[in-house]
Amino acid sequence: MLVENIAWARETAHADPQFFPGLAQGQSPKVLWIGCSDSRVPAEPVTNANPGDLFVHRNIANLFSPSDDNTVSVLEYAVRVLEVDHVIVCGHYGCGGVRASLLPLSNELPHVNRRIAPLCALGDRHRKELDACADLDARANRLAELNVLEQVRLLRQSAIVCDRDTPPLVHGWIFGLSDGLIKVLSSGYDDEPARDTRRASQADMLEAVELADR
Ligand SMILES: [Zn+2]
Image (cartoon, rainbow, N blue to C red):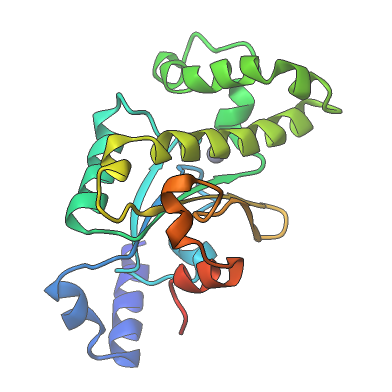
């Protein structure tokens, strides 16, 4: 991996001699990305973004827990200091954390169990719909979608987001492992009275968060 780093650094500097001097001057990302720790869903490659484009927080099952200082400190810094315009929650189909919340919890994983407890509760709240799914995979995928929407809801009502004069837009996305494509579950322009003046079309939204329009 270190050899790969040297190769990457050399190639990048060769392609753009100003790239690293620019990085060293500071960061001004427009987007906070909250995603899953899953190795198959890295934020930058799947959005064709560069270093400097995304402020990233990842944890098991892309959860926003208001009581978790790790997650909340990232949000606080992104919103109040970096002044990001967008917060993207990106879940993914085939999520192991979501799937685990639908199965008997393992005694070997007390920390994971605590982390996914809100997912278990969310699954219970949607038990009827989930039970109607064909199998465990389908249930887990539907719960992954519901989970993204729940995190979006929690973020939109968090004081850090709401208290800013111009709140960042919160988007809910889900990534497909089988085709590499992202589906928008909730755009930041959804019906919310506080944001009526900030409506824009889906195309505008996609343009705004086109992080690496190169
Ligand atoms: Zn996952």
